[in-house]
Length: 111
Image (cartoon, rainbow, N blue to C red; front, side, top):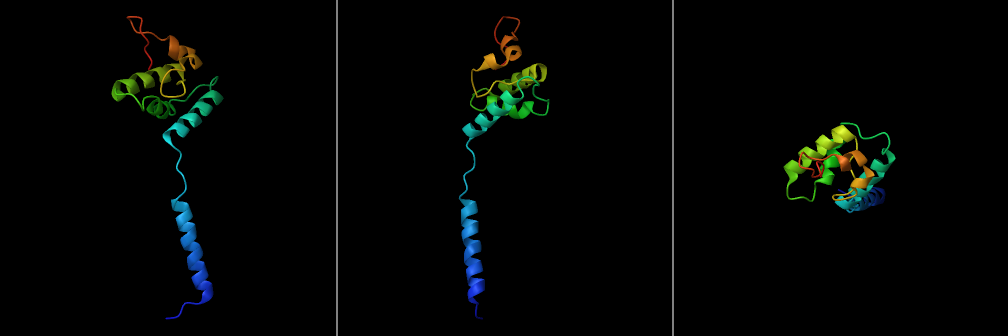
């Protein structure tokens, strides 16, 4: 079986396209946080919907050793305040409701 030059060139181009697609960079977890922070600033006044809270809290709690309680309280705070601070720690001043909600003992309610 003989392969014509046009078919051979086409196969080589397909191979290069497949290799290029496989080496495309996937955004790092930190980049996702930057995008989340940008999206959060865009929605700062209108707030998150309840559908956005789990994803925002998943990132917020991604670096803690206490994932379950962090996710529970973060989602509770997001549902009430419609806001999650950008990043995995601090920046609570961006969301006053999230920042000012306290426990019975006076500690911060939201992670």
